[in-house]
Length: 204
Image (tube, rainbow, N blue to C red):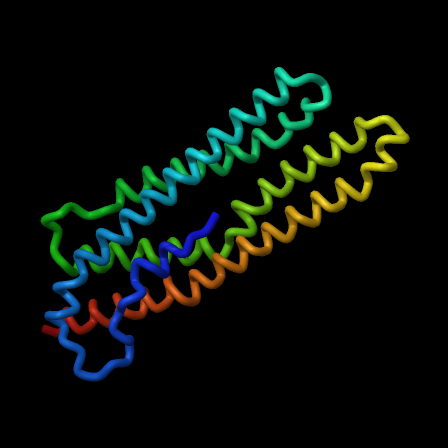
């Protein structure tokens, strides 16, 4: 999962501290930016939910139709479906809270600020609601598979399974680092810019 869409949606912003910024120019680009942000979030939620459903279906097929050796795949289905449900609920929430096309500009600004702050919380806590359940499911699947092996095979496979766990941990660390970067480089500058635009527009 790479959420750098947050950064790309706002990567051409005027520096927040720039003096004499033309509020009219910012307003003219605001709608385009918010449409791009909404499209990126929609694509992210659909992509993650779709990947979760496909992954759960593949694991279910392997666990039910490929013999006893694959039964441990079933252990990873529940957390995968849980994360999938989270993204579906996120999409429903975003659609419900998005203001209409004819809403006042200040209403749209406040709505986008609330959305970006919400995304900042999600990205900052990705280890809790995303990586932890998926990691627990993968670890349980690998551990159950390892301990189901016969003794001699289990001894030879120890290094292999330890390597799988290490590779998973490294991948998850990369996802966590990417999300932290997205917060630092994309979401927080966007929040600062919208707050400045809101304050300047309110004073006009």
